[in-house]
Image (cartoon, rainbow, N blue to C red):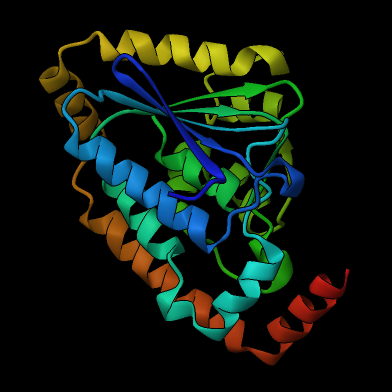
Length: 246
C-alpha cells in the first residue's frame, strides 16, 4: 500500500483517505495501485459493507500528479489508472464520497461511480480534459449526460467549465452540502446506516439500479483508446508542454 493512501476500519465501513496534502492529494502511480488494492480487499472481505472515499488536508484530489503524468505519456498502456477505473466501475458494494476543496479531473470522474456524494461548501469540481486536448475518462462521457443532463454535461465536458458544490447539488451529482469540517462525519454516518442494511438486498438493489456493466466498460475502454490517440497529437503535446511549464 502507498503511504499516501490511508485505510481505517469503522465496523463495517472501510475509510479510504487520499493522504498527500502537500500535493493536494494528486494521484500518482503508487496511489492508483493502492486504491485498486483497497477496493479488491474490500470486495473480498464480507465484513466490509461500504467504502468511503475522502481526501486529507482540505482537498479531495487535484487529479493526476503532473510529474507522474509524464510517465503516463511514455507508457500509457502500463499506467495503473485504467485498472483502478475498471475496478471502481465493477465494485459490487456501495461507495460513499466525502469531497472537500479541489475535485479535479479523476477527482470528479470517480464520483460518477459513487452511490452517495457529500461535499463541503468550498468544493470545486472540474473535468478540464478538453482544455488539454484530451477526452474524458472513467466512462464519464456516458455517465455525465445520464446523471447531469446533456446541457450540464456539455458545459462540464465540452466547455471544460468548473462548477461549485451548490451547482453539483442542483445537478444531482452531490447528495448534500455541508461545512468543510462536517463532510467526513456526514459520509461516515450515512455509510454506517448503509452497513446496517441486509447485505444481499443492499448490493442486489444497487446492481439493479446500475444495470449490466458491459456498456460502461466498453465506454471506458473506448475513452482510453481515444485518450492515447489524443496524447499523440502534436497540438495536444504542445498544450501539455505549456501546461507543465506553467
